Image 1: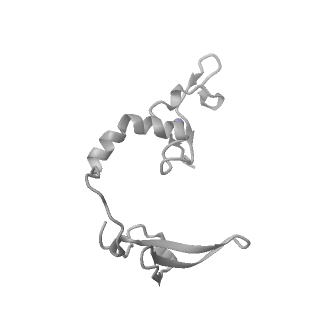
Image 2 (image 1 turned 180 degrees about the vertical axis):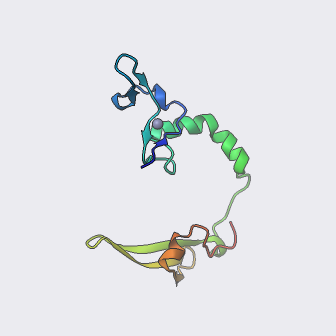
Image 3 (image 1 turned 45 degrees about the horizontal axis):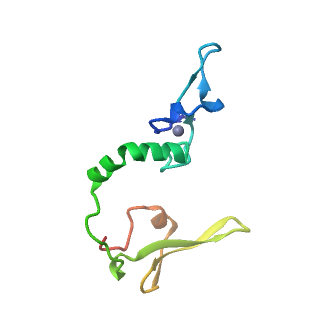
Length: 125
Ligand SMILES: [Zn+2]
């Protein structure tokens, strides 16, 4: 099991018991390490750490990857979303499908097509 570091730039500044680590007498508050993080696509240990990062780097990240500079419109061409049915009693999934949020048209999907984040019917943004 490999541990990941919380990417929060201030994680070590939050004085919680679980962050206090090291040899007796020389303990320091440290960045959290976990096998999985719960926030920000598995990168941050808490909403606080996620917010800290975004407040410091969010503007740069948006500029780097492309700032939205005009209104986008939901159209038939970009309204396809993936959906599936979940059986709460049995804990099983089935009926993977594309659903067009405008036309309500449905088209069947395989589970692996559902899991493939690059597979889409959308032809526009
Ligand atoms: Zn953190």
